[in-house]
Length: 334
Image (tube, rainbow, N blue to C red; front, side, top):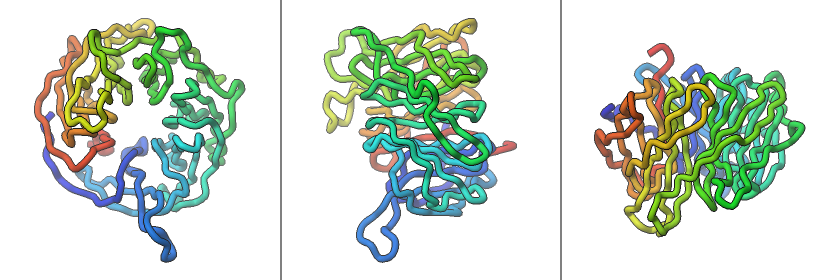
């Protein structure tokens, strides 16, 4: 599970990243110098071709009009989806020969604090969790034209009980069951389980688990979540934001075992990690977790116990300032 540096690729303000399903292209949100002699910098998306050994070759950089808080690629590799947190929008850009060129996106207005945008496995829907309205927006997607439009109903409401984990932020699909999992960011932070109807594109919440540490009197919010490829374990990042300027905190990756019959969750435990884990990733083998500490500038490597799901630290690596995104994948055919 230990890491060896092989390359650094420049991209100003590099943040959310999305990789194509065939592992041949990587898309990275960030900034570029304002075009046509303008001042300052504008939102931009870089396209990298993934070569032998995972090395990156930048093949495109173009202004994106709107800065995206999340990037995902559809199953055809022809479209890139993103979201605007501040403006409350979902965007889909048409790629040209797999490269982002700055072509004007298809845009659907939703509500502010729309946090991510994820294509469904059947490529017929785009789901957009939004924290403050406590909704997951359900959009229809046409893979022939790239058009997106509100589904009927246009959204699913998150849990509303006083002691429920609320405000869905990020979203993943179960690898084999008709289920979706979300980080429920705040008020009561935690994780939610939803049933997924792939024909109608509808979600219904069926379980939510609060991940607030017992005996802790600070502020915790959840951010990222991932499931092992075999569907046995799910992990959620707990961020201690009691003091946003602090260099350390009571942050953790919270582990769950996944019921193999119905997909429901049972908590394994809280595993201390780097400070403010906005992003983390699991290896495709399901054996390792990689946690980016946004406030302490380090990347943690953890081994996953294949029987219990517990995490054990392997090493910790110094990074540049405020690492905000980490992906882990094997290049195609490797």
